[in-house]
Structures are given as C-alpha cells and as structure tokens.
Length: 173
Length: 173
DNA sequence: ATTAGCCGAATACATATGTATTTGCACTTT
DNA sequence: AAAGTGCAAATACATATGTATTCGGCTAAT
Image 1: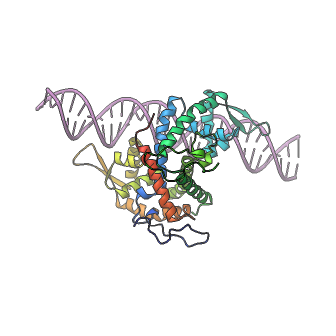
Image 2: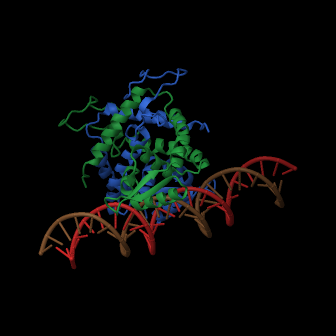
Image 3: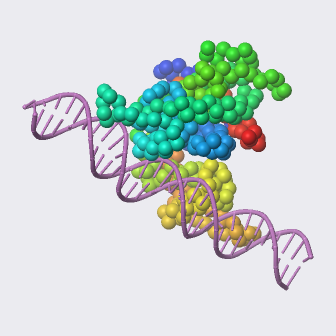
C-alpha cells in the first residue's frame, strides 16, 4: 500500500476525513521515509548544514543570517517581531542582536513612540554583507532544486502553507 | 510575478536551468513567505511545538521521541546509526540514550561481533510507551493535513525526497 | 606477535538555547 | 498624579547541543 487510499482528490470543506494510509504515523505500515515532517526536517537539515560552513567563512552564523533575511524583508523591526519571524525565543534573539551590533551588522535604537521597544536596523555594512551572501545562498538553492519544476515548487509552497495554517489553529490536546 | 517563470514543465536531465523567479533567495522579488525552506522550517516548528507539550505529559522529550521512532523502524541500532537517522550528533545521542536507559525505555548491550559498538533496543516498557504515544501523534498529523489530499501528500513527498537527494550530492563550495 | 592507525562511543569542555526573573516603561483606573 | 497591571527587553540561571579529546577495541602491516 503506497498512497493508494480511498480518496485522492482534493478534499473539500466538510468532507469526510481521509484514510492517510502509510503517511499517518499511527498507521502500522508507516515508515519514517514516507513521513512528510521527517522529510522536511531532513531537507532543511541538509540545506543548512552546507550553508553553515559557507556562512562561517564570512563570519556569519546561521541564526545571524536568518535575522538578516528577516530584516531585509521588514525594517526596522523589534526584537519580538524578529523572534517570531525567526522561530526563536526573544531572549535568544536579544543576545544574537548584541553580537550583531558588536560586529557592526545592525544598529539599535529605542522606538520614540514606546521606549520599551528596541528597533533593529541593518547598517550599510550589514546590507553589504547580505548582498555578498545572497548569490552564495542562491546557488545553494539552485542546487537543491535541480530537476524540480517551478510548477512543482509552487505546489510545494501551497501545501506547506496549508499545513502551517492548519497548525496555526488552536491545538487539540 | 508569482510562479510565472518561463518554463513550468517538469525538468528533464540535461535541460537548461530554470529561472526560479520569486522562489530564488537571490532574486530581488524574493520573499520569505515564498521560500520553500522557510516554510518547511515553519511547518516543522509548529508541528513539534504542539507535540512537545503533549509528549512532556508522558515524560518524553522531543529528541527521545525521535529516537524511539527510529528504533521502531530498525532494531537494534548502534549509537552512530541512530545519530545519523535522527539528524543529531553522536555525543548528543549517546547522552539521550543514557537518559532513556535510566527511564527504562531502552536497553543497551555491546555487539558481540565488535565490542566498540553499542546496540540499543526498545524495552517492552519503551514499546508500550511508544504505542501509547502513537495515536496522539496520529491526531496531530491528521490535524496538520486537514484539507490536503493524499495525492497532494504523495506529491509533497516526491518533491522533498528529490530535494534531499540533490543536497546529498557533494556541496559546491 | 607487535605496533600503528582507524573507528565507535564516551566524556570534558565550550557554546548556544531556553526558562524564569527582573527592570523599566506605558497605560488604565481611581 | 499615584498605584496597579501589562508588556518588551534584558539578564541570571538551567539545560541541551556541539566540538575536541580520550579510551578501548578492531584490523592490517610488518
């Protein structure tokens, strides 16, 4: 039995729950190798494993790089906002920002509207570093996606977004 | 521009490299929200975030659960083999196994063929715990997959496996 | 048979992350 | 305007993970 469960058509709202067969971790025929979450972790792990080495040559750690990509998107940003986007605890981000300030990658200033908030901004040097890193990451991305069409990537994104949305709704237990 | 690049058909071996458009982290129009790896990390994070809480009620941590699922698949297994499958360093697994032995979840014995190797096996109590946890994890999985067809899951698996394979080949830089 | 080298696991040490607490600011209620 | 409450960030402390080293056992070359 391999993905040959009863219904394989796209599920509609209110429809009966599908039998997940091999994919369901509670199925007796389940294998890690067919587990979406295991494969996600695996792909993500390999992707970052390689990248970590390259980044370190430029004095940038994985979490620092992640913070930079968050900032590129939306700047300035508070510690809390960065933490949420980077899937990390506030305290951790707070310390990472300290190091980034030391390295001259970002600058901080307290929000004039609300002094509790620390606003973080990439410095020109930080932007420069990010620009230098971008093509490297781009090559790593291309390497990961060899043989996969843009259509497949779009499909992947749709599914991943649905999963995230589902898990965003309040947990059951 | 959203997934409307030149070629969207499935890529063949030896074909020209696709323009990844928005998906490529080195594209000027790139957004984290459209990054496959970011979304994988996000989905994985949420999935385990919820599960962690539930598991702790049963005295089981996330890494311990992961080791158990690896062992369910292939038993007995050496520390090194577990480490590789669980995407964790040997030293970390070594310590996790210590704790699991204390908790009575696994037993260890050295391989009679090669005394350097430590073989790890789930105890009946460990199997019992795993059986108790399985339906809980199953429900979490179902919750994550609401509205996603088995066909879509199969597609997701295929793509994730391809990505892992690609990254398994020797890195470029 | 002895030794050199390799390998798996364990451990000492360094680092990083998370949890709980503290500090300072803002806002509401009186 | 004073006090209580709530929030953001920072920090002290605990835990977990990773890196480098050590220990013991296997294997091959001499």
